[in-house]
Image (cartoon, rainbow, N blue to C red):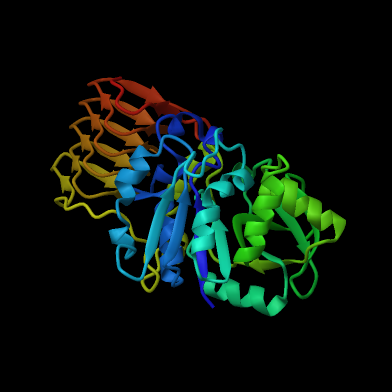
Length: 372
């Protein structure tokens, strides 16, 4: 059986504040050289999903620049289709309020596709998952919908919109809540759902026309409470990084330095693809000192860097000190500058001697293109 993929690019824009002021969540840089969208898109391609629609809302120019025709993900070919679905594309006169309303932009895309099943995903949850296994489990269960979930949820990753489920011995949902723990043994939804394509189209048409806009609250929860649908919970046992707010984004960048998590997400047989850039390897001068870091290509390092994630084309001058920080592409850190617990967005200039120190749970954020 084949699937069509639907990706939501803007679901958590408001929760990530300053980081999504000029970009969608999907295009938010992560891990030194990737964007959030790279992970879900790679998972779909590795699961032999060749028909994918990406639903956008606003601020999607950088996302379009990053994805292009989908070449790096092997989607720019005759027997594959990749579409960016912007708002207003289907005659809607308002920007959508929730993921169910957003799907109204994708109805024509869904109708034009032949696969019988659809997998829908947010971009904030990072993992390496085989959707074909999840689809097989869904078909065997006879359920109306499969929710992909896991058991681990750290305090800084928790969100008021988390879908939480209890299951029986067969993995069928027995209780479902949103933002409230239903009891011992609960699983937490990963923003990933599998269902029949025609069933999804009927849900979109019926619910959006009645002013409903949230897939989880207005459809899934209400229909489950009424006893109208059967929900299968597919438990995923691999590493999962939820990035629903600034603190979780900040800490999860450092989590991928852990060998076990990095090995589970960046698997050799199921690679994570991203836009290819031909950059020179990072250069480390004699005055540099680097420990416990991810440093991307194209960087020039002459200062001291500890426990940080450094993206492409970053320049760190002699005498500069960086600790527990995320430094995005094209940034220049001047001589003698001191940065600790910070998120420095793209193309920032930190002047010589500047001092930026935040807390481990409240990092300093410098906006894209600023001079400090």
